[in-house]
Image 1 (tube, rainbow, N blue to C red):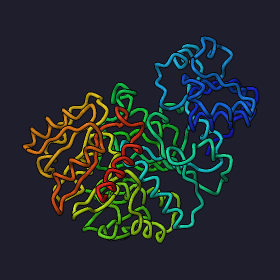
Image 2: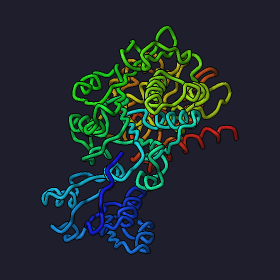
Image 3: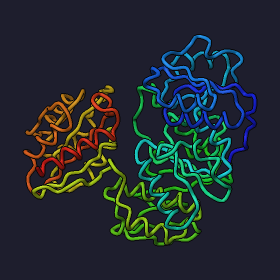
Length: 456
């Protein structure tokens, strides 16, 4: 829980509008700060500007004025996606003006205890799982952050006896100073977002800030099968709840003899047979283990945890079953924006796979995929900036059917021709979407439209 800050008379620049920028600008204005909002996009591209102006908040669109950041500014709150090399950010740093994201403001103002969930893969699934477990267990809570509303939209509505469950990215966490979640979870660390962070060291540092201000009264949830998490644990001050799919852990949740086991109460307790977990894939089993540990830290009853594990089948665009056509199953894993996420989705199936992959070129060679391509994939359909790289990896894997297409819709048409009864057609791009699509959601929706069009 944050120590509520006095904002009256404080001068704040909010850099970047969108959902979180508008929310934090409104909140700080409501709390008495003198707020100026700025966005490089044109006024036509900033429909949110009129909302702020009606409240008396000045909004500057289309440029970053030279005098936007000056010595009289107390704080700059930036949109998480704006890089630190942006001129106003650099000006603030040069003037020793704190640069934060809205997560820092939410943490300072929230009376409710916060659960922060981060990781390279599985954040949304795990956050959603925790929310559903708490709902089933009748534990008061609100889910926000990268899911649904911005954190600063909801914090003033929350009370001390309910939880704020927050999905958090490395971009958001990098801009925190005093943020102290009651429960903080790091699901995994894989190479991602190096165009923003530049180095893995900065990426890991940004993720680990979720634990930075925790004390022995708080809980950290960590993946015991990941060396990075094991190493980070040495520097963490809070109680650690481990989770593992491959080994018993001394304080946490793990798999043994095809059962999910918890020893967090001081003794081994069987929670559920693995066979009864509705989510598909080993990586989703890891998400489920993490969610159990988090829910237990929130005092969720066993019944809520068990009911959710048996019934929750996943989140849209995350290994989402779409349809079966002529005995071929189609799965949408558009959220797989890096190699490891794509790898885990391929490993989730025993059937032959027609893989659709491609997207924004971030300089990744995808060689890590070759062994699984060789073992599981019968054909590869590549699209976007990285299409030729995927076809080269498919060639190395000995795959004969290799096809390059213009976009996801065409990829589905080709995949249908390549698939035989009993096969899986899997969209798992291993890349960001921004070469052709505005988001992974748009890409996944187009995939689903293309699949459903095959019925016509």
